[in-house]
Image: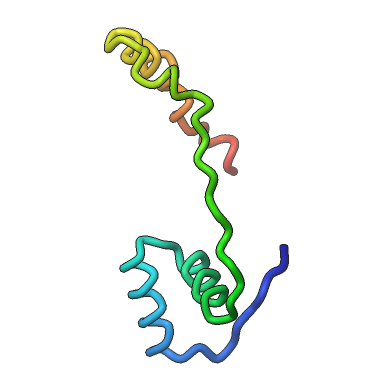
Length: 84
């Protein structure tokens, strides 16, 4: 993958890009890539939908789900000493 840096984007164009990306519920990066592909005729990549874990969906009881959330809650804790 390559990166591209654009310069001299005026305020109006930036505003329009942000508005259009938001309207499509996309990040600016994803929206601009989609627009470039569309304008150049490059086909969009298809998103494959996988169903590998469908059999597990909804298989937990409410009690099991609560236990899981309780037992994994500490993963959300932030150790401030690690970010100094």
